[in-house]
Length: 183
Ligand code: 5GP
Ligand code: MG
Image (cartoon, rainbow, N blue to C red; front, side):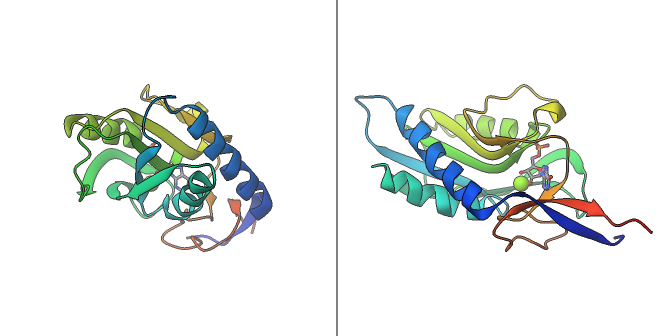
């Protein structure tokens, strides 16, 4: 790994404000007469920090949640995806008939979300709504429905707020871009 540094893209207050407005959007999208309860399904590990903040924002906006997790993998250790999605950990709870909020850190090619949406449908989940913190629409290879997007970003490799580079930088309170240092 050549030397690099991280440049801030979204600050902690920007993230906090957007997560709160995203929760408001998600609540506004719920059926009027339906139950105000969602089964949250964040994808480990990248969506952990976003999901932790989003679930508390949803609570402030009057939604109760049940939490489960899934883990899939497509990225190796570097900055590029292998393009092949593998299920590493399935849901522990039965999603059949329950409204699900699928949460991921980044929509990139769309393969991960496509895979998980199909999987949840196979398991009989109720309506599945998808929320991502970041979306790179220019990278999309698979047409996939993403209902709620925190921020659209260009095709840059980002870290922080749960998102890693070779397992590092998840603890950063901001989202930043990885910039290679020049010789
Ligand atoms: P997709 O399946 O849409 O191509 O990829 C989605 C997954 O790729 C995300 O959940 C995330 O784990 C990873 N990913 C996409 N872009 C980035 C990025 O800029 N930084 C990091 N660390 N992971 C990314
Ligand atoms: Mg991921």
